[in-house]
Image 1 (cartoon, helix red, strand yellow):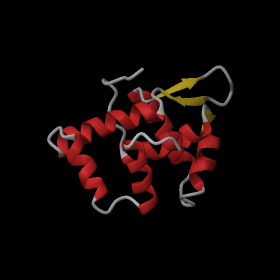
Image 2: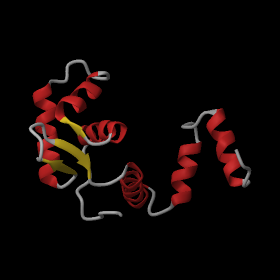
Image 3: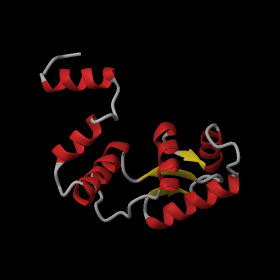
Amino acid sequence: MSKPDLPKPTAAELDVLRALWQLGPATAKQVHQTMQAERADLTYANVLRQLQIMHGKGLLLRDESERSHVYSTVQSQDATQTNLLQDLIHKVFAGSGKALVMAALRGHVSKQERDEIENLLHGDKE
């Protein structure tokens, strides 16, 4: 279910969301370990604080029944991406999905991705 009243996640919050989408419900320690693979300088304290802020904003749920709190996302990855994409289309492309697709096709997709898109448009099964 979509939650349109949720605040738009910041870039840092999207990093946390990506880790949680990959992990599923997880402790701050687990999120920190996952995120450290891409950012070695990221401290546990920073991740914990970000999780707490995101919980306060309503972007995350927190299960406090165990000693280590377990965090999970309020929205699925697909729902979040759809909401962000709708916002982008409205703000940047004057509401035109076609303009977004055309901009993306002008150099932002590989030949393999372009072939997959063509197959999708022609109704071919993979």
